[in-house]
Length: 149
Image 1 (tube, rainbow, N blue to C red):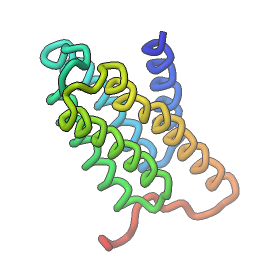
Image 2: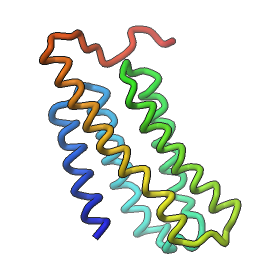
Image 3: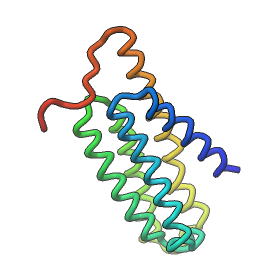
């Protein structure tokens, strides 16, 4: 059931961000969809251990997503990418916790690794909604910083 809920949330939130969002929202949505697709494929091919041990491939993909989201937060003029990068860092901490304590219950590891995505998706959609609100009110809405600072 939770997989159906997550996929519905993924398509609804990322679809909205891709359709109505500015450049940072579209980038974040694309990154999240690509990460989900890559993780799904990787779990079927390599990391199908049912969370009994550290999912090394998934951890590597999560780390790549974290780097991309930190870069997005650094370059974007928006505040919300900081939140999704932070939540992605929490997923990395879950992998680290499983490495530190291999006896961690599989359900706890799975929960700690996955729960953050349920926050990231609506935050991305909210960023797209806020972008639309700024456009409607006529506020300038530059998505990217003009210089690397």
